[in-house]
Image (cartoon, rainbow, N blue to C red; front, top):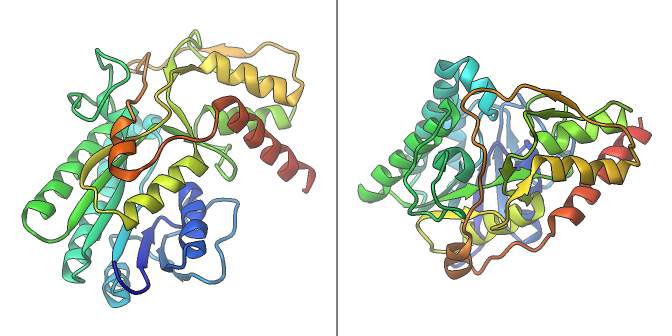
Amino acid sequence: MTGQARVVVTGGAGFVGVHSVEALLADGCAVLVIDNLSHPSDRALPGSCDVVVRDVREADARAALIAFSPTAVLHLAAQGGVNRSWRDPAADARINVQGTVSVLDAAREGACPRVVMASSGGALYGAAEELPSDEDTRAQPRSPYGTAKWAVEQYLGYFARAGAFATLALRYGNVYGPGQDGTGEAGVVAITSVRLVNGEAPIVRGSGEQTRDFVYVGDVVRANVAAVHGAATGAVNIGTGRETSVNRVVETLCAAAGFQGAPDHVDMPPGEVSRSCLDVSRAGTLLGWAPGVDVEKGLFDTYAHFAQKASAR
């Protein structure tokens, strides 16, 4: 790629988005953020990026993307939350499927040569028979959220086969880190951190022995930047290649907080996957990427962020 990279980041005001925008700007890119600000990070966007406050499905958002003449689109805009998708699968599809197709069509109209999209390894592979799961693992999502991610990956494939642009789906593990919203359905790390900062016991669903591939946001951002600048296509897992139980996560955060009490247990929702872990060897081959932050260090750093944020109030 010659000249300055021009990157549109949809969902750029969100948790992963702000971190990614900071990294792209530091890398010398011109950045346009398109975000409806429905779920912003507690980290402010840098003033050196352009911002269009619109839903990606709206005509104004499409027009802004086209007018920016991007060399790449990093599509992060989505409604997160598996539980939310179970409650309202139609809304999940409207936001995550229709929103993505709108972005892809605008990228085609704007002659953008490359689109990188945030997908989900854990939600896509479901109850995989072999762990860690590689990218050839059969997709068997167990939630509307995972089903939507699988559907939009098929749209990515369609646009690529039609010759519109090169596409890459980054299948994230369970992303956590500073700036995540711990007040809603953001994930066990952020929610537990907020509860501990407030002096409340953590909540564990089921036995807590269910595992996930918890990947630090800084590592995800490095993958995003490498993907935007690279030529890899298809799908690539972004995780740690390591199973970590929810109990282990909660124990580590309790240690960081100095919390001596026991967690409260609630029932595990039906359909929740018991084990998840991603094979990340393809990311090393195609992106020159490997996870760099140990889970324990990442959890301590994340809790420190929430504690500092609370003390500043």
